[in-house]
Every structure is written in structure tokens, then in C-alpha cells.
Image (cartoon, rainbow, N blue to C red):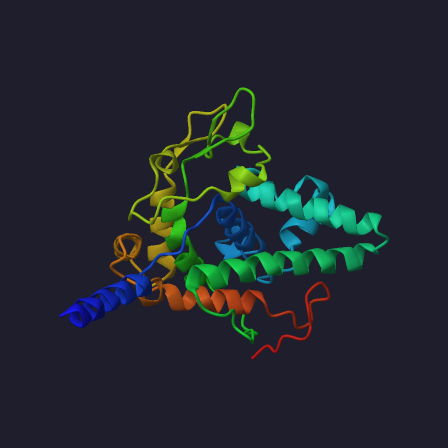
Length: 281
């Protein structure tokens, strides 16, 4: 009888472990947000991606002819404190490499490696599997961009601030405060699990000094359903099950294109800022 109880407990523990959801942090939002900006830059008028689809930090160093790198590059990198904080940490790392005598080219290559390390660590922790050993030559697609937009469920509307005299909370959609440089403790705080919906702050994004109010959930829905075969409602329903421990993140319908995106973004063939040892298939 005791053995039977132990065996049942063992099975239940194993099931719970297999369904366990990785804990995501504010820093993860910054890393994946910056990755998305480095791979995709959507031209709304032309309806096409104008980024190069590779993780070479072009979003920082090549935006506006490279004139804004010290500010974090693409202005989109300054619209969210988590993304801004990760971008500026990489800018600071680049500056440190330059102080050590690196040439601008070598400093950027070294900074790209630091960024790749962040992405690999996130991937392996979030998916509980090794980062792919090979990359893909193909360019990222709108379907893959749609798939990664599906994960906006995770975006926190508000986060805690620590070790600050007057501020204890930050509304991440407040564009005026978006350049808040988050400290290590703030970046390390865990987010709530997937719940199948966007935080309310993202459904009412106010553009400063205008009467314009945007709904990110609706913007994403239109993109997802125009450029892919996914339905946002289905994606969010699946993520809700993941958050509740009822479904593995590996089993969601839009996981494969997200994994393909990581592999494509890592292909450095012909890109002088990226490692050349990774095989691109």
C-alpha cells in the first residue's frame, strides 16, 4: 500500500513537472522585444518588413545611418522600459569594449555575441530544450512575426520599482517614462503566467499630446489574421492553458514558426557582425 501511494505520488509529480511553466521576467520582455525589433521593422505604408531579419543589432547600430546608437538606436527601443534597459546595457557593453581598445567592428561583433548569449539563455530556460545547433538561411516571414506577436499576452502593464526615492511602480505603456533605466532587481522580477488576455494598459495606449488611443490587442489581431493562418483567440486560449499548467508550450500551434524564427535570425552567412561558425541550412 505504501509503495502504491509512493508510485501514484511519483506519477503526479512527474506530470506536474512535465507541465511546469517557466518563470518569465521583465528582462525576458526586454530581450525578446529587442530581438523582435532587430529582426522586424514593419513599414505600415508598404506593408513589409524593412529590417534585415538577422540578430546583428542593426536595430541599435544601423538605424538612422548609425547616428543614434548611443541612444539605443531605433526609437521603438525607447518606447518600453524593459526593451530600453536591455538595449542600453548593450550600448554600455559596446562602449566598454571600445574603451578596452576594440575597433568599432570588433566591439560590435563582441556585443552581438553578448546579445546572442542572452537570447540562448532565454530560449533554453523558456522552452527547456537546447538552442538549435544549426540556423536557417531563409528570411523571416510575416507568419513568424504573427506567431511571435501571439506572445504579447505576457507583456506586463505595470511593474514594481525598487530602491527609488519617490517611485514604486511603473506603467510600462507610459511613453513619457519609457526611458526609465531599470536596475537589476527590477529586471529580475517575475511576471504573472500567461492568462489568455492582454493587460488592460495595452488595450488603451495613449499617444502623448494627442487624443489618439490605440488597442495593441486589436492591432495584433488584425496583423495575425491577415498575414497568417492563426486566429488570435485560439492563440490566447492556448496560452491560457499553458499558464494554468494544462498544456505544454511545445504543444501550442504557433510554437514551430517561433522556433524557426530563432533559427533564421541566427544565420550569420554573409553578415560581418555575426559568428560564422554556425551552419545555415
